[in-house]
Length: 429
Image (cartoon, rainbow, N blue to C red; front, side, top):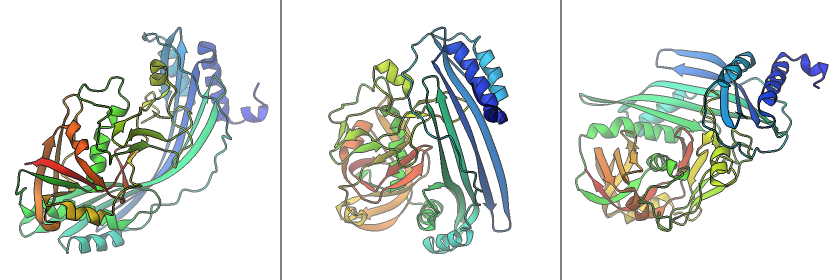
């Protein structure tokens, strides 16, 4: 029985009612998820600046009733209780419940004011002008600083909570050269405070390089990938690490070159995943060999395994599913970025994407459109307005010659980290 002091809190009283509803329907096979947070956003243009404050609350429940899984969600506890009653009438294929995680932590959350986003408009404007030699102009900057708290309980006794904070943004620019113009947009996320230098460089590349009007001068050669491009390609193959059945072309022992080690480790971000399973480091590719897989509770139960702590909730409105949380290429044995350049005899440096990579895992194919720089005998020659690299995924990762030590993380929408990557051969258009 919950004390009168707890009942005095309306939210806790409603949570108690939800727990009682779920226990009556599912015994111990239930899970209650709560999320609440706020964000402060600033939008700046050359002529104005505006700020806004947003708040969000979400409730979700998952339970096994009559041998079948059920899910319900609502924007408050009352809405969740109504959704639970409605979901009980939905016909669902039976499946066994998962092995629920155990553990307890204090659900107390520090109620401290959320600071506004930092003021970086002038700094980014100045650095963008320097990077583009005055040919690019910052047109809009949206910055958002947010804080989110999650609490997860289940019928096995789990009661854990965590709070995390982030800063992200979207920068827009226009590049001009004579009568030609190009609009560019860059999404970025910051671990701490925003670093304007890499944002300015990538935004300048996207706004200026397409104005050169030049294409690739040769049909094949070495391919040097900027960390942002390498991260986008890595994010594109992420479904391989959660698939029940890998594609037929995949060779586990020779998935990639020995230079490639891929990990997923969100321990720096959160103590547990969206199901309350403790976060841990998972090796997915070890020196070119595919060695691991990411599991949530349901996929682990189906495979006879334990969850790896990768139950991901894109929103409280949908059930958790297995997915990457912080996927990255290991770089401990990498080279300095500048040391990769002399290895390029005749090739292209992919500086920025001009379209999302097209990755077809079933057909073993990739298609990457980018803008960049022609490199001959280790020296940059001229810009490339538009180029395309096509080929087979099974060959792409085996052709990685070296990775650098300049790993950076990008939202994809999960965090994906990659360094500069050198591929010994690629086909260009």
